[in-house]
Image 1 (cartoon, each protein chain N blue to C red):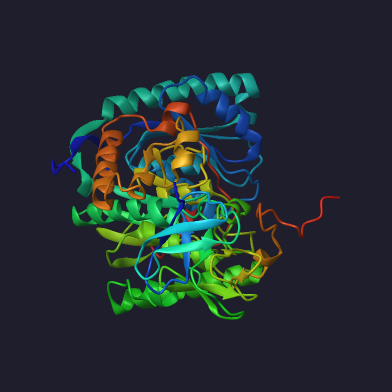
Image 2 (spheres, rainbow over the protein chains, first blue to last red):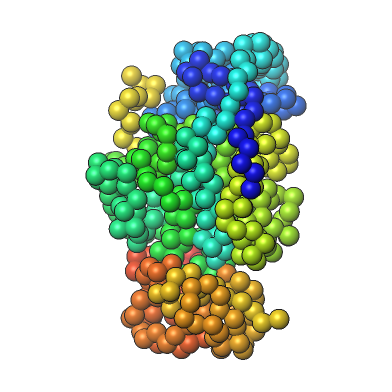
Length: 403
Length: 109
């Protein structure tokens, strides 16, 4: 393992955070604007797309989209709506401009339909991108400036043995270097109440963890669905408790500093748990953790510039905004899906690497990707995203766009 | 070459297969106590093999933690999965297909 201190050139944002990419983001505010938004971004370099499909707005979804629009890797934002929906593109632009980034927004109905909107959008995007390039401030960046998200999906019997422990060891290295690691999936801590509470940095955090744990158990019980998929069972995991023990391994061994809600950044360095489970509300919106992309969106909304995704069975997804690195602890999966896998953690099972060596190699890979090397999903053009209706009591500092 | 399984914690009564195994001897690596077990059936990599006899209702222990309970008596060397082990929380998983994990309780009509 090399002990060289990894540094690279990043992008300094007005809020003091540093990004590892300087992307333009096209946001659509209703499903009806999705085609036009993708057509605007098609063929444009460093331009990603995400959006919300509902016509009725949702405070949670707006908080999430604003957190992603003001993500450290994003330099400019174009919002496109149809014209009938509740979510307002111009309100998004206004909030993004306040963060120091150039932003524009318009309605397709005002622009005069599909063709004119695509032309208008491409012209606006060219100006925004030029502005973002001109205003970019390059600064040195290191591990202490990174927030790394830790996610697992398509887990199997190797995930808890190799993939997640390697990511956990990397999280420890990052925390020790002064950075931030965020792990999510409180619905994958089922049965581990005491194990989780023992990781709290203080009594106050212990109470936060207990509340988040109890909410997750109650939520799963009420919707009669636990966070385990057919592929998990086929891969040898038998119970949610077993999957949870493997999933917790991706958090490493450092104390947990607190619980974050979706769209809330860490309140300091160290390890944080992200709670994406809905809060009690008169309308319950489906399942928590409906798919892996949703969890990755939530980690990015916490400010993660890079997300580590452990997949034993083998996933192909990527994400907009923050590079996704795919790690597998399953040697067969690594061989079968090599074009999609960034890192082979199975070598700790065969004895070819110690856990510490593998974590050091993964840290070096993270540093190279932070410096600009594309991750496998970036190279393949994977940019899956998912923003759903949900209710979470807002973090106290902001209540979305409806103020 | 003998298939390998890994026991994570000395309290564990199951080990995880690191290779697909045929019925017969399996080397057990990891936390001490059991060096070898004899698989009673073919078991796939990533799945669990019982290291000791486990009575119905008793805990299944992995990572030194309870991951559920035996729903029938389990002999040493048996495959431990949905057919003989259940979550203490998740009731739906007991209805899934034991081999593929696919749901059997949703109608497509």
